[in-house]
Image 1 (cartoon, helix red, strand yellow):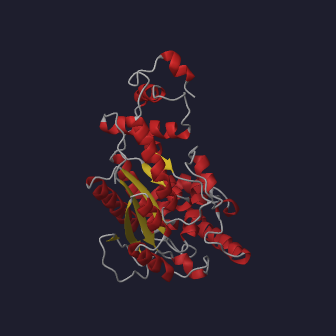
Image 2 (image 1 turned 120 degrees about the horizontal axis):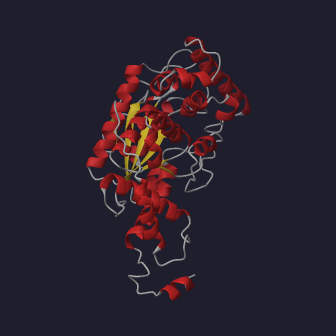
Image 3 (image 1 turned 90 degrees about the vertical axis):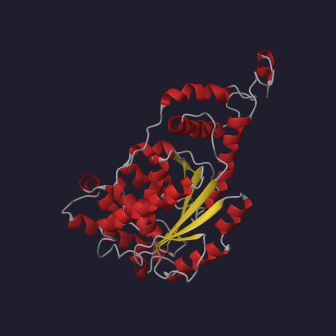
Length: 366
């Protein structure tokens, strides 16, 4: 697929900054909210040629799928839990449901490849199933390149559908037993990092399981090196396309998130990135189309250790730091009120001129 993402037009940067600075407050006194408002306004001005930020209709998309490597005991939970949690999302019982209800966020759950899908019918549950989970990356490619392309297309379609229905902001979450293993492998391959830096404890595994997980991901990376006759990690990114890397090491939910992110940016929407796994999807999307970087809003800093590596890659300043490591889009949901607040002050807060505050009085505002 060819993506048409508009690079951010920096000619709008100065007037947007002036608009923010003229609000009835000391310069910079809203801190990171001012940076966020400027980013959202730049996206809006570039893509819609208007100076009003729209952030009323916020939605979270949770992409769920299973992973073949789960069969080798890299998680505290079996693969059956993925489908059980999908049912929990649909029934309203998960943390993400609580946060979406509290903040009036619409939630959709996408079955991208759940091995044991729940027998449920709901408008909230969208079937975009590719296969019953990926294959075991230790032994073979996770999926075919044809499946990657299908996943990208399906992800793009659901994002486009949500935007056509009126979504102003899309946030992304995920669910999939062993998907931290896939994300760690992808991160090692893309940034040429050893597994000691990219592999974390995910759901809270023991020391023994942690070492087992590291060894398995090391084997998966070695398999890729051998298959393409490469001698070091740095050559993977040089020799393989992002699509090939996704096929070798990824997951169906990760691939669909990549497609949805790329489509969101093409439609001129900010992309709210949750934790580690969603951030790795953002990293892959960035490899496909670097212009997407300006559209990412990083919701929080996860407690999964490798998340900071991805944040540093993007020079990102996440909105929240709460020690979260749940996934599901929980960090994205918690960040949505901040996004709405940034839009509201940008759109509605009075300027010194409109409030009839003189320059002398302006300097005394504290």
